[in-house]
Image (tube, rainbow, N blue to C red; front, top):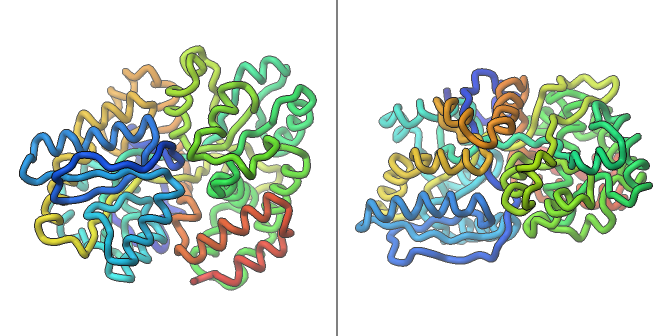
Length: 441
């Protein structure tokens, strides 16, 4: 059921998630490039393996079946894409099909009249909507109307760890924040970074705050920010979360030089599977990257995974999660009638077709298509897929990534101040003051 973005996106229940959900790379690698000439419609999306091949494969299959209505794809690295797409849309030069994460950015496009209202199209194609996981429509919905096609996979953020490194040091995975802080000196003493972090990409740091805000104060703390409540960033639980992050930084909890490591390069991922770092907080798309780049790291049972630990005295439910409920495709309002027709036909016949669903599962992802239980169970990654499904389906709250939930203006201020927070350049109080200044903007 579609629900207004203003409330359900952040506090929406994930209960009722069918065993099908989804995973896609928020941080990917590879240079931007174009492919498939002769298209009448255009489509921009993220590069980086193994996700890029799945996206490109869907376009190629569609083009083969529709030679007179082709789609030309262009790929970009994650961070470059976020800038490029906003600039192109603002200049009236958007691609026909716009890949995104929904939420506040989508709202800004809607308010500027830059994307198509798809509500009536979904009403006319009810079987398409019924096929997808219902909660995926929250971040696609603005003021009760649908402006994007949910696609790909569900991506909760989880805590990954290198089992071999833990065995080497003789310690157990953390069950609480106190455990995390106690592990830091033990790994450092062995010359192993406690946590990998691609801090230059900014959004990677953000995941730490998303979980700490939730675990300490519950999802209501960030919901107040999202709802525009005055001084919401100064909530005591927010200040405590900001303080704990800086305590972890001061304790050398992260790899040295983390502020110069990018997620787009997958350098943060490599630190985990090579044993240079013991743990990494990241989205579930990490599994596919570890599988593709880590040699036998995954197949030999070296990769561990768990939900984020509890914080002593915290109010948040330990089963809550954060991340991306899905990915989203919108249609530019500037596209001509033929381009819009091609895009809608691609949504109906090309997006999450059976072959694509199988490819996501083979990559260790849970697609947002209902009724894939048997496929998940048959996968070589069945244990991880079931873990992902359980996290998403059992969470009382599935908070959308903050930089996507907020407006572009507020999100940019957030990301800039997160960098300063992790570099110890601002105090928790200064961080809160800076963010309070852009609430509702």
